[in-house]
Amino acid sequence: MTIVEMLERNAGILPEKTAIIFGNSKISNRELHERSKTLANFLISTGLRKGDRVGLALQKTPEVITAFLGIACAGGIVFPVDYHQTHENIEYLLKQTGPTMM
Image (tube, rainbow, N blue to C red):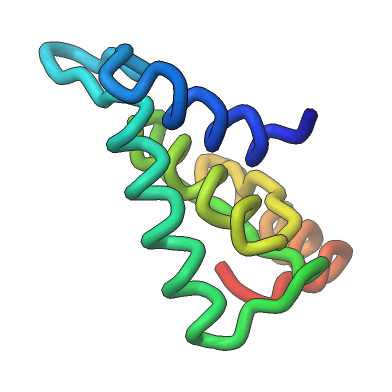
C-alpha cells in the first residue's frame, strides 16, 4: 500500500479521526485528504507530471505534510530542501536533483 492509498483509505474509513495535531489545532483524515488532493490538482494543472521531481522547503508545520502528500498524490517525487543550509549546498542539491518545481 502506498502512502497515497493509505491517505485515501484513512479518509474513507476514519474521516473524522485526527491525522495531525500541531499546537492547539487538529486536522482530520478527511481534511488532510481534501487539502492534499486540492494541492495535487493544482500542481497537475500547472504542468506537474508523474515522476517529476519537486523540491520542498518548508518549516516543520502541518503544511509540509499536506505538501508532501499533495505532491505524492500528483505523482511527483518529493525531496526535502533544508533552507538552513548554505546557499552553495542548496545550489548543489538543486543541480543534482533537477527539480521541475520548488
